[in-house]
View 1 (cartoon, helix red, strand yellow):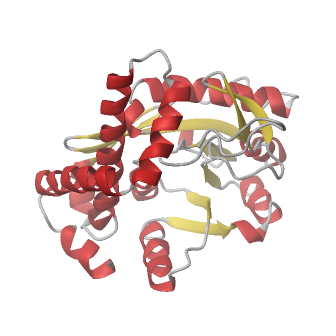
View 2: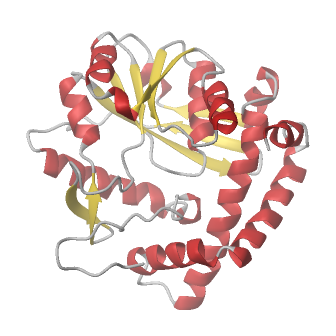
View 3: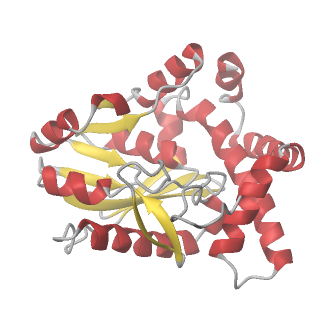
Length: 283
């Protein structure tokens, strides 16, 4: 698999995206369990759309997921000049200059690795993020090598706990945080996501407060030319005094980002797998 991904990384981007389109169609057809997850997520979050519109969006979700997966071949193996042509970093990039503690709110769009690569390639800061070990050790090593490719990077395992992450923030690191998934009931709180109670870890608020850091959103969009990585202005009103209110605000702002490119969000994840007591599974 790793050798294949490395080889695919040399293909012209248009060819690779065409392969991704084909792979997405195959996954849509052959993985009904995950198709049901995407369908259920979109039914909850885009109930205003008709069933035919949502079915078409489900198919596009699989295509974008597959295209982004294949793009890791060039993200982690192509030369820096190639990356420079395909990754467009824009917006309020000045928010990331200096040495002030910073938490990047990086939602789970399919381009999350493209955003990380663009930032670590172009911004001379010490970046950190949180990493979940993969069961396949060869695969795990490949992912780690790809994410450590540029700049001063440090990947903390979930077992490392909060202390080293907070310490690095207070020393001026930038934490690339992806807090918008369902990690189970432990330490999660229920806040609305598209009007549906969603178990959400209040880690964005917690790390910003403990690290005395400001929060800068970064939204990565897949384009025909590669990816656009947009740095948005820091949130002036975050964190507040209430972690639950902060987390609800995070989800509300996330919805605005998703609505601009809904098929690029990570709907293959069981975002609503943890339900309030007494509620049936949506899957």
